[in-house]
Image 1: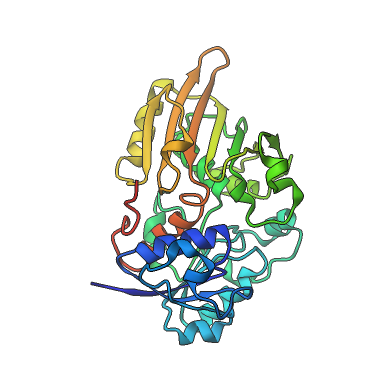
Image 2: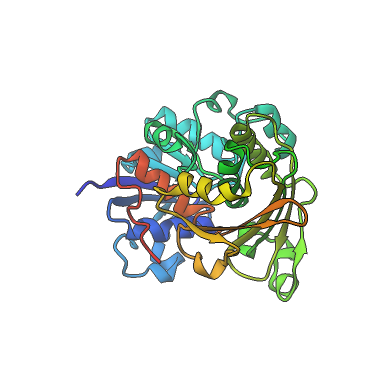
Length: 347
């Protein structure tokens, strides 16, 4: 059986832990390196007792140094690091011949000026932007590009829930690209292991609120990918909300219908018929987070509001799964020449 030596850089956060869970169970991944400044010298099992006695759980965290990662034998490295930090490691690892899947925002954008606008700092490695492939395998031609990539920019959680329902309708000219309005709700884990009091239990429990308005950072990659699909720049409204759950994203998007409403089902089914992780729920069936948590599925439903002439798109995914770790593993499978679904069959 083909085994791919794999590293996780920044393995101690929520996304890092989910990556570890998936890779420890993956039939073709040999976890050979995990890094954490905080836990260097400690074993996976001692930091994450849930992994105790799993094959590979005796692996010890090391300092996040490119040479040490190379010395481990890693062929592909996942970067579960903050934006601005990941680019430094991506540059060093690529120079050492290691393929990189970056889960930060550092390589998701094609335009370094857009990065600076949304992230408030010059891009740390602009020379790599044109090399990076935006790692959403369901988009047209993207899985082939991922297979050949040395650097994959794994998409954000909100963008995945918004882009996949919209792209087929934009490509078919069924909706007005300038009329898109989206509201999303995410579990608190989407904020990472933040010390911000707003994400503490007493502040987040039994409460729902909007945040990062009116210009959430993920708008940059959402508008980029929707603009590619529409063939014209897209500017949209997006309001994220924090809800008192651990994980899961529920998104509702609406847009003015400019084409034949009866074509919506046909267009979506044609786009995703052979995509193993997109589940189409049909018309008038909203998506539910309870059906997608701890999986790599995104569920998509839709409805047509005849009174307003708008189409409503509903989606649900796990922000730590399809919105982060498991989608990155999906790209890993493609880069390694494996079955796309390898290690991701969990329901």
